[in-house]
Length: 127
Image (cartoon, rainbow, N blue to C red):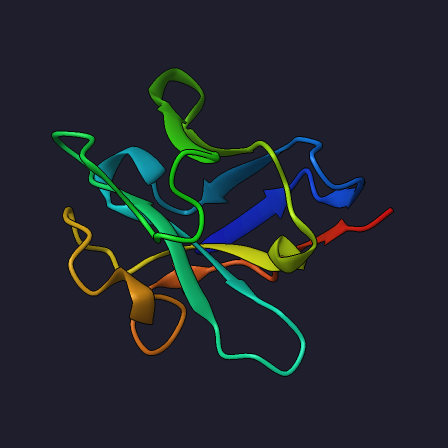
């Protein structure tokens, strides 16, 4: 059974940091492009960042460039999202997803149709 599970969310003050983790069962994250998406209340889901499978190229939304970093630990079959300098506008449910492609083209639409994604983890940035 294919399953994706995110962890690491929580409440953090503005300027703080969090690291999210993404793990999967039923397939290996190492084999596919993996994206993080987020959805804030009343807003459309947004593709935050994606990492290719083979060449590990990364693609960031302008809103998080320089603050967020995606990485893989292939030995642990885990993908991480390091989030620094967090802002209140980063508050959202963050989900990990794949379209079962090796490259990130179209990653903003991951989480719909074919592919796999998790339930998400809540990130709240507030003082």
